[in-house]
Image 1: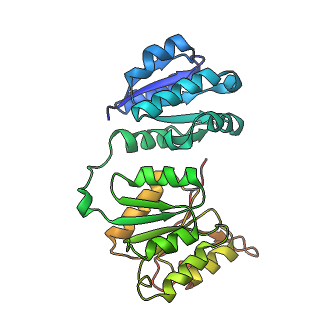
Image 2: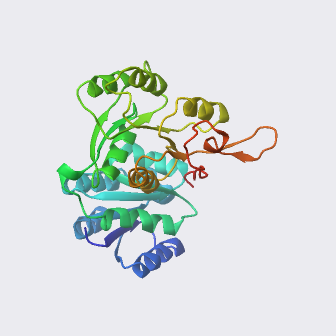
Image 3: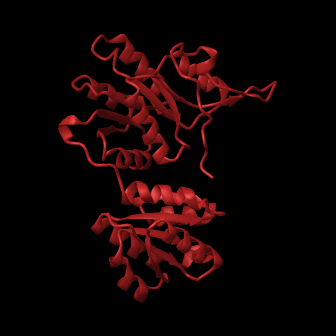
Length: 291
């Protein structure tokens, strides 16, 4: 994919000039576009990546977002959105999450935007399908499933299911190299799935890394007591999640723990791996949350 971006905004502000300058310094060709139909019809065809900065008039951009979505859907393109919580939420109601590869709050962390664009524009060489590690991704959030699968697909063979029981059914006839498992799911939780897997000889040795949004002490200690191969927060950026999965395979199955909690009495950070919840785990890194 070419390093070419259409930067869409309703005004040429200092922020827009700064984004344009930084992207150009990183080797991107930047095409500026106003959010009106005439401009978009000419410029959306010029690139496969869109950086969208809707601003406070986002509620008046229904047609704009419809055009962006259609172009992404038909052309396999992606959008990166900058805004406030309300602006990002409004975009989410108009554009399906599977084509939104990045969401950024103001003030913008431009380095993060560039890294995420690079992940799409200049991906690592795709491995032959027969050589890829097989991953089962389990989560009841369909949008999150598609986002993570889209980020892993260039390196791994990824199957997805949306419930714990679907995961158990899948594992009855398939043996993935890794299961990325949501901890909190209705009916059958991630913890229950892992217990069932460990109770059956056929699935007992399949590695499991939990993907979850919970970061409190009780939850982390409960999860690590089950001795999974890792615990990664959903709040991490997609490239980070992919990096930790990569590292797990590079290190030949060494546990990956990417969570940290604060002791309620001392307010000091504690890493569950270091406290013995999983004796073989490496010292954990602090989890970055989305800015």
